[in-house]
Structure formats: C-alpha cells, structure tokens
Image 1 (cartoon, helix red, strand yellow):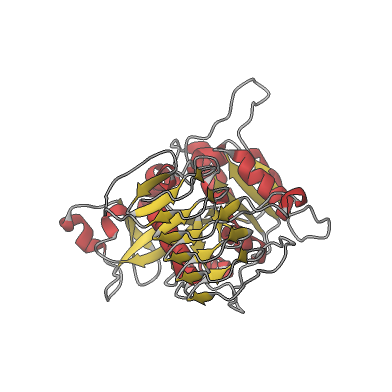
Image 2 (cartoon, rainbow, N blue to C red; image 1 turned 60 degrees about the vertical axis):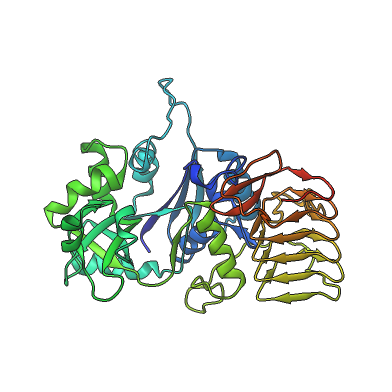
Length: 409
C-alpha cells in the first residue's frame, strides 16, 4: 500500500498507574508481548513504506523494546523509525502537546516519505482490523479522511467522542462526550443495543490533505480541535468496525482484557488466519508444570510452576516463577519481558510457596515471599501501603515490591 503509518505512543497513562509508574503505557506487558505489539502487528501487515512510532513519556521503555524485538532488516518491505522529543536547530525543545501537535512537529518526516496515504494508529489499543478495508472505503468515497468508529451502548456513549454516520458512510456530526440526551439521541447511527458510533482515534488521511490541515489549522489534538472543523465540510468518511476493540485506559480495562484473553473469551484472536497477531520472538524456554490444576487460564513461555499449585481463570505472564501449593484465582501475573538476551534466564517475578491470590494484578519485578495472602479479606474499597494499592477493586502489587513472609490483606 502507498502508505505511511504513524503510531502515537507518547501518552502518560495516568489512569493506568501504578503500572505506568516506570514504563510507558504502550510498553506495558500483555501476555507474551507488549500492548504496542498489537498496533505494530497491524501496521506491518498493511505493507506500508514507512512506520513512525512517536514517543514521549518514558520513551526509552518503548525504544529499548522495539529495537530489541524488531531488529533492522534490510530486506523488510518497510522502514521503521522512532521519533522522540528533541531540540531543533533553532534551540527549541519540541515536546508534544497532543496528537496533532506530535505529527505537526515531525512533519518533515511525513513530507519526505511521499506516500499517497497516512494512517494514524494508537499505541495502546487492542483490535483485529483489516486496514486495507479502510483504504478501500476512502477510495470509494473519494474523501480526504476516514475515521474508524466502533458501535457502543447508550451507557458508554457519554464518555466518548460520538460520530453520526449516514447510510453512505459519510460523517455528518461529531460531539465530544455528549451528556445531554437531547444531544445524544439524534446521534444514533445504527439499530440495536449499540446504536452510537464512537471515534476509535484511528484515522486514514490523504497525505496532502493531512499536511495542509496541520500547516493551516491551529490546535494540538485531532479529536478535540481539528476533526470537528472538517466534518461540516462533508468530506469525512466513517469506517464502521464492529468487532473487538478495547482502549486500554484504566487498570480495570487492562485487567479485564488480560483475563478475557486468558479464559479464551476475548474477541482479540491471535490465531485468526485472516488477521493474525504477529508476536515477536523471545527465545526463552517453554513453560514447566509439576502436578498442578490449571483451568481456563493462559500460562506464557518461560514460566515454572511448583507442585500442588492451582491456577483458575488467570493469566500468568512470561518468565514467572511460582512455588508449591499456591492458589491463584482471577488474577494477572504480568511476568517479565526482558529487552535483551542477557536477562533471559532471570526470574524477576517470584511467588513463593503457599501464597493465595484472588483478584490480584502482580506487576512485573515483584517478589511474594512464602505464605503471602492477597484476598482483600476486609472488603476494603481503598487501601495503599508500601507493597500494594487497591485500584478499582483490584489488588495491584507495586513494581519492585518485595512482599514479606505471611503478609495478609
């Protein structure tokens, strides 16, 4: 495809803390990969000429991961570059204030790429989408822009940007987080229990139109500033994507997405023959088990599990070490994903003998000594100490925490 693909991966992920205390949101582990691998997979499969990943917050955590797992291949059909904030020749520090500002301040790369189309993806979303179908729609409509949109319920609509799409797939209205029913009701575009169409923040532009927009219009963000001004001109298409999509914005959305994947209930299909997710290799050992009960769960590569341990409806991330006679239920153990081969034999996440976990998110590089019990026995709504924090009802261990023997919560 005559395409430049941009992945925006610079957000702070404030609502995903403490997971984003030491790592950028797109670089947060997700099973055997990182969240950004989903967008990178779709990007590579779309056969672009160039892929630009724009970073900012804790940029090194994304850069190190990409450079380690996506090595430069002179035979690849695409060129992959990472663009981070920098000082320009005039001594100005180019920090990015929003989605549009990030691309505007890297516009010279887009101009040099000289492709007909530019697609903008987010680095923190989960989906299976055929990007060629979006290209087919923009060509059919002969528009300057197509926005990908997803059906949502009335309950979800007031927290999202809602688009009105007519039967010809043109967008006629846009309202950001419409709260008033008198504003929301006329925006219904579909029948059924998901009648409203939310912007996914995924855009396909004709490159010339994008360059003109960024050089002639002010505003730091596409969704808030620039897109609302384009829609009244009647030249914006809406591609309706009805399958699985999750914007990882909170601890709960991340936790739920992990458990759906682990239990086989997720709409994200790694093995879809038409839209497979390309998981980068890690070159580590297979998982090892010793007389365990494991049900409706996913255990990733390099994990070791001791005798008598029960794992129910949980995701155990790569390179996790779990001792004997543990009980882990409805929990996510992030595990460890190293940047380089020197750390492949290191178990930085350890759960020792006799631990009990339910509704727990064990962050990377965490150690639980023998007999640790994390069950929220007092049914608290809020709690924090040096080892754990309660977020959305989920017990989250703090990264690098070493929880002492027989600790109970």
